[in-house]
Image (cartoon, rainbow, N blue to C red):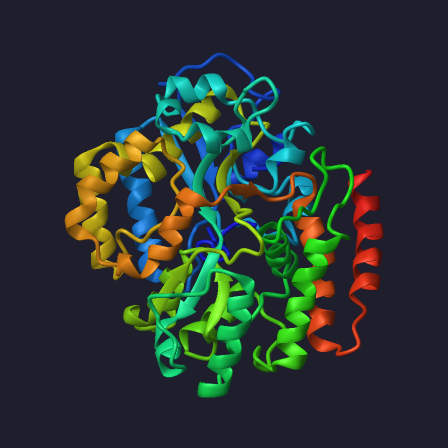
Amino acid sequence: MTRVSRWSAGLGVAGLVLAVAGCADGTTPSSGPAAGAIDENAPVTITIGDRPTPDKPNDIKAFEKKIKDFTTAHPNITVKSTETKWDAQTFQAQVAGGSLPTVMNISFTEPANMIPNKQLPDITDELKLVDLTKDLNPNVLKIVQDDKGRIYGVPIDVFSVGLAYNRALFTQAGLDPDKPPTSWDEVRQYAKQITEKTGKAGYAQLTKDNTGGWMLTTMTYSMGGSVESQDGKKSTFNDAPTKKALQLLKDMRWSDNSMGSNFLYNQEEIRQDFAAGKIGMVLQAPDAYDMAVKNFGMKPADYGHAALPQDGGPHGTLTGGSLKMINPKASKNEIVAALKWIKFDQFDKYTTESVAVADAKTTIADKGFVGRPGISPLSQETYDQFNKWREPYVNVPVQQFQGYIDSTKSLKLLPEPSNKGQEVYALLDPVVQQVLTKKDADIDKLLTDAASKIDARLAR
């Protein structure tokens, strides 16, 4: 699941574009995938996705300035843009319909299916040509590689899930905000205490728009389970860890009454209520801080972020993110132009001190955040140097993320389901919803039914 905040749950990262559609949307038509020899000086036109929407004029201004700066540096490249963004519900239809731009962000859940289906171009050689490969984290690159090590996309944003918590509610409930829960038993105890002392939801769960299945998968991982077999051909969640996760949610909802009254949350909605002080704890990636503080007015001092709670572990936490994908119909010149854009847009700030410092200053001027903890798509050497350059500009209470920071070194990073991940999440959403809205929900039956539906999808 990408951080579409980001992500959200956005976070946070193009499909099939027919030649005729390419002419319409600004993609230079080609005679076939990666057609023609590379001429870096030849005139070329690309279309980039993820243009900010009209309700964000400052973001549009910055976006357009970046395009202008890029085309000034690369006068042979014409850049057009579109608001097209990755959406789990519509992406595959867009791929099939040929309505995606030359380059755009998509989720880590997509490449495992798209690479064998030839919906992503091999960009290995072009990455070397634009001198980008050496700056990328080799472990993260595995997400976009085939079994021969060829590369089909550019990871730009990586996350792992932890526990976001409201330090103010912890204090009001008599809990130490510097000692967040580390086990699920403690989460249940803390949630009950928060509700009893403050009247707020001690804990809340994402449940809709594929996020219910996403966070159920995360809980399953933290309890030692899995959702799919290693080869991705069969579901594996109809067993003890997932049942234990659902039983915990059921007990917190119906026995403890510590989950409030809203049980239909997507990413933005739950962050808004969390920022408003209505929720004590929720599973999130650290970028939740950005939206909670900047968009919804949460006080930085009230935000805390801990490791993902474990049960009988440590077992690990779910990791995911966004990547830039390129239209498989793109010519070699278009691929190179797209990679030059990606490097300029996403990576120059990591590899050039002046750009890193300027980006930090611009981020602060735009009331953004410098130094918020997370996981990097960069090699460790590149990332360490980048952080050193920006250290004087850090404006995030990093110490309030200490539990999460420690977990990035102690917990295994477990990838999202490799086969039809978004479809799996969508079919698990109703399971979580029913557990939280129907007191007599039969967990065994819900999981058996979901497994049957999912296995049918995975077998296709």
